[in-house]
Image (cartoon, rainbow, N blue to C red; front, side):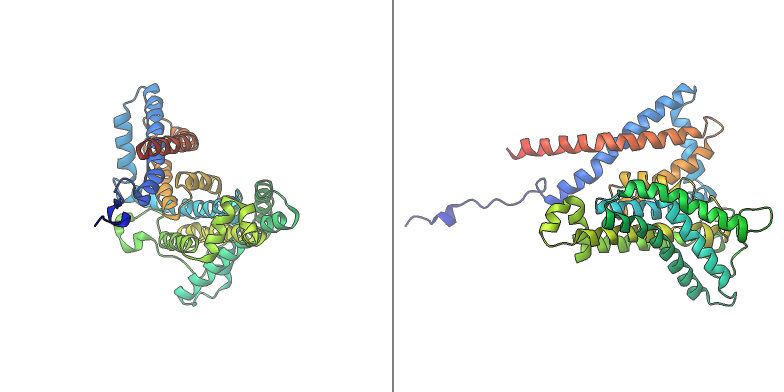
Length: 370
């Protein structure tokens, strides 16, 4: 008796190379690695142009950052702020929105945290005070983020233009308030807060003495986990990602695009606003005019290098924080501005190399499957 077609059919088992998770891993990891290699080569050329050895400069960079407790503490501190602003930008980008207002949202959050810490009695329990201050910081950032969200959903105003202009407005208002009403004489910062102070790492380990690193880093990691869970494990996150990929198709599928945009930009502002606790509650214990300078815009680079994934953003934040602190460590050999140039090279390399490498990977897979 002849075998049935079902028994004769050859069962093709999925191979390791064809596993979807491996394809996703390749497209997520290989392009940024290639971009970083390109940036390192450019960095080598810059160092050689100053007559220095790239190996010696990179060794000094690592020794001045990850090689000692103080330098590592400074990397942790700078990475914390960049993690918040990078997560804020990446959250908006997942919905197809470009939030360039991280600077004003971060400053508004820091100001709200400082104001709350001044109002609360000194005897307020630490956990309660921290919670209230963090909520105030998130709400302030969310209010600033909701303005471009409303203008976009109600009038179709482009969020890039609105967030850029809002940076100047919010920062000018905060400067006016601090300079005219709430500052220590001959300074541009508020009095020190009475409640809600975050412990520094130096309070736990004396080797970090002098560094600004504090427990706000834990909050940043928890926020990254919360963003990941929302994006990839909830219906709201699915709607947000669907709108980011194709808003017309998402609307045809029954998703309220305007509501998703409103939520995305508002929560993006909440995340950026919470970043203000790193400086205000964890480092200086007061709000100072200009403390957020540059962090909001560098968060855009962190989000791009981190491929808009919450955990990738954390890694990218550490990378850019290392370059920033490393610029101070290598200043004796080459100008610290070289690290700023290298950061720009990384951004350009990611923007150009990532799509090209992904195209090559997909082409190679197509030829292999054929």
